[in-house]
Length: 417
Ligand SMILES: Nc1ncnc2c1ncn2[C@@H]1O[C@H](COP(=O)(O)OP(=O)(O)O)[C@@H](O)[C@H]1O
Ligand SMILES: [Mg+2]
Image (tube, rainbow, N blue to C red):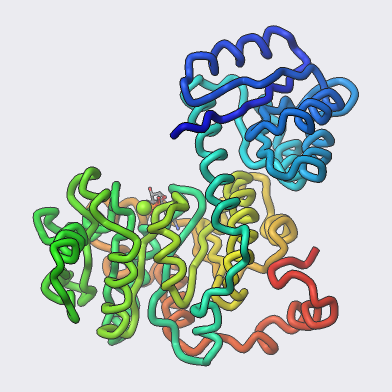
């Protein structure tokens, strides 16, 4: 990386500005280009200096951080704002999210947290800018508009720890129990958990073996011999046993794997990582359906909004994306209606929160769908499985109010705003 990340610090307290400058001074890939003491100064400096990232204090006299973020979004759209806030300001966080902040840091934060979020935000912005300059409509975008049942289903979330692996595994098991031929791919190449949830021996073959063979010029029209069969009938392509081996796996290899598996199965479930990189993008492009998971947390909601924007720019039609609210009843101050309003889309499926069944199953290495079939969480999974393996709902009957709005306003496909 030759570019340094240009950071502008905005805080009304001089000690905080100094402290942040000093912390960032230790980072060789970060350059503090300036420090502003208030909103108007921040907007002025950002316009002149074009920083990559602005660290914005939320509470400042005069123009507050939220208003300044709104102005920045309009005047310097290439700049990503990281909002800094003290605990207990949930409402502020919500408002900053709507104003366009990309990330939140709750004070006090460690220098590791600070630099990690600067780098993450910067990488995401760079990827977005280089990738989305020309808006390309992928041919895959309309694939599942044809009425065919979905065959490659990516389980994705822009945020980790929301239940992707839990849902991927149980969804695959539910479909297999329903008589479908199902492959489950652990695309969390660095830290795959699918093998753990299914209690599979990590010495089995993994996708790294396929990648190695493909690199060596081998041709395959079946990857059957690389899959491990679980007692539920699901056939699993494991993630590599060590994180280093993840680097072997190129985006074209992943696409090839999915294309081959698509031909051999009724359903291919892919447990995706939350990092939005080339490989993940390959999976999402290849998918007929993206089950996008969210929970009732402000960060989850914020990331979802950004992800939907990205999907729109990638040319994914709204029918390619389904929103799945996991742990739907574990409300911590946010209502489903608020979430839907904020992201401008209805939640398509909900999965109940059931720590007892889920964690017990996790620790035993037996999916809850098998061990606790009666539980509500299993029934929710079954409904989800039926929905993804059955024909897609027709837009008109499933979401009449939305279809009408889209038609009437001819606005963005994802947004009601
Ligand atoms: N519906 C649910 N009810 C209760 N706990 C859940 C539920 N879904 C996931 N969890 C728990 O949340 C944690 C994260 O889930 P996991 O599937 O590993 O997330 P991810 O793959 O998105 O990182 C795990 O401890 C899991 O047991
Ligand atoms: Mg996971």
